[in-house]
Image (tube, rainbow, N blue to C red):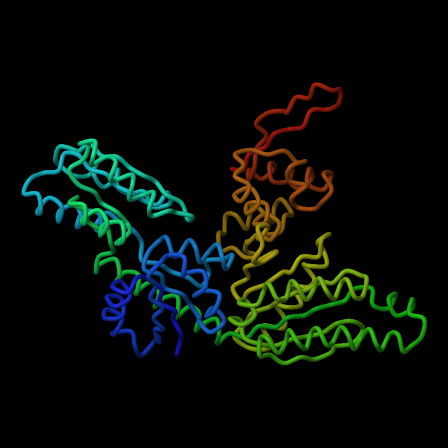
Length: 432
């Protein structure tokens, strides 16, 4: 049973729990209601280790938690959409008994939907004043924003994201309504959450194999003063790896000459990728040499191990020895979990592309990696120098590959990059 941490205001949490009843056989919900948004940080920090996934009742607690955890891979939130805005707007009109012509709104900068929502109404668009807030929002400041406009006669009502702001404004006689989630939005979010849980289950049923190699181990051994120093080093290295193995509930084995293998589930390995990276850095420091890591996923231990060997071979080809994952579908992931993460496939079913690559003597993996780099960097065009830096290859090699791509009409030269200094200008290329 997957554990879901549910975070939101008490009223929102109760509504979500009621609608989540139909998923009780797949997911177990643990409610964490808060009164003040500042409580989200302590809730997430305290309970994150015990939850498979987090569900937040809105964008604001979601963004706060994402900043704390540094990732959004195990989080979903009920989004702010036009329907929540329309509901509050209709309630305000009903209370007034007429169309509101002047309105004040506070909204989060990442989910500013008010202007777009109003533009879709086939009515005279009211004049509205918007206060955009960030994660470090001060609700007293929002309250004062609405109050000042009301006192100046510039508004007929207010819409806010915060119930406390609405309550304070209504106490002063100002028509104010909270823009909250609708049932439709909650149901859709629960469906997305259920799909995430199924995907996590699939990953947990797949086998993951990590191969960790302390490179140039023979040289490291030769430099040891006595055999005992080498044995002490091996004990320290194995202690670090056993601690990692324990964290992912896996099994550890030593393959000799500085190579080790850990077997666990795909889900466990992916969840602890940052722990693996920290362990690799410690191993490299302790042994004073580079450490290569390859991770393979598969339906069987054999297929996962084969992919792990492919991955470590790929890692050893990289100058920085980044962690590399090879998935069962042939997808390669370099530097997983980092800003430098790059994903591309080593396979294609496009027969025309296969024929062109074969004719140009270019591997599918190389072409797909070039394509992924260009897309990630957002380049419309590129030089071989740009590409060589990202590929960690010599510019001469990259020029040859790009020339072969031009030969088979996968790329074309579109100009030259002129320099103020003397020297041959670089050609500018574009993928076709």
